[in-house]
Image 1 (cartoon, rainbow, N blue to C red):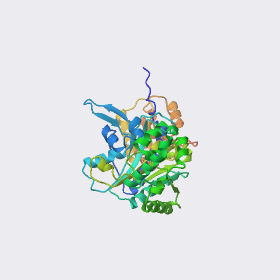
Image 2: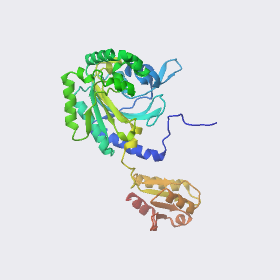
Image 3: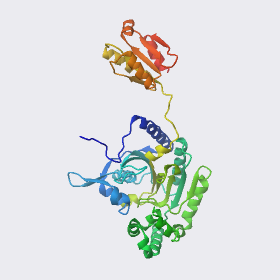
Image 4: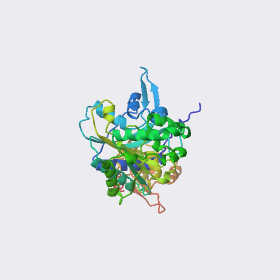
Length: 414
């Protein structure tokens, strides 16, 4: 049988995960520093949740959901994003009247053709501020994004922001855009023709050159905004301009139907054509659309595979590694009681028990190959003396025989 992983669902090996662990630890620290608490939701949800939240006009629902029928013929889907699940969880717990600062991380799934920077199983971390009206929450989230980039060593990035106004603003602009584009339907890509019918606003985000050429003379979204959101955008740019590259981008709409108010995206030219690695915005109406009570909300999601590519922090190299080598016949219970006591004395050290009956020479060779700093050796001679050989694996190669208490003390103080 030829067993292979599914296309677009990569394996992560230990050497890959060193950076992941640094990233996850950094995310947790930054989120917690803002009083944001972790929430975990299921991988599987009712398909209806995403039909109602993400919107039928989005590519996610049209072609990217991993959906199945369960044994009761109910359609379920692997989650394609995190916000809808978080809102669903809050509604089910009847907590829409409370304020929440929440974050999550985990795998997401979209059935799209894999390309550079995209996978069918990918990972996101996200933040959701629920019950917070427009104003200070936007500033805190952008500040959080800047902190994350600083701590991860990401310097070359740009924050793009826009405001989608209220329901009337959207409706008036979409009507004007339709009137402008309808005479040019024969020059529009079929994807953009479909968007014109379902969600005209998303045409602004089109990647088709012919469409963008048309949009150069089309009605401008910002001309339909009232002064209040324009001033809000201007103030945000002025506040953060000394900390990062931030600008208003009137073509920014984001891909999901539930966004209202401020939307933002963080991009890096180092990622190539698929340059966004973080995005989000306000979605004040999503709770009601999912059957809950009204609840203001704003959040963002980070593509972890993409941000891993940008991280300039190297895995820590100063963690001490000690090889635990046994040679010859051993009293297994006594031997691993020693290993247990060592780990209990200092969890900050890696004690790598080789679990091998190989020769001392081959085990030391393995210890050097895997860059262990020291070795604890228990062989026949050590057993007879009731001592343990502590060997420095550096160029000096110093070694000493230690009683158990001295061994524990040395290990504890590494």
